[in-house]
Image (cartoon, rainbow, N blue to C red):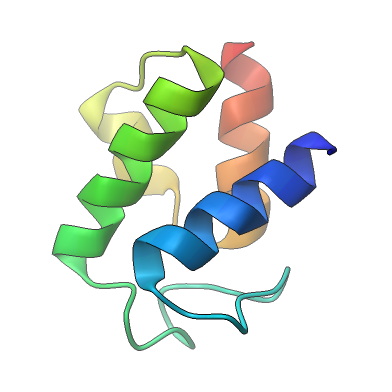
Length: 74
């Protein structure tokens, strides 16, 4: 799987939604609240073996930014 597919898979699991796609953001995904945001960051760190700083986690507000952040840490 590609990095993008892995991120989508993680987002689907964390948000417990089947229909998470590349348009997903905090604005249009009702399950993307503060708790799920932290869970997402934790799952990304574990899966990709990276470490995210609090300010980096705060910047991850949509799928594209999540992917870009993960790429920048690898």
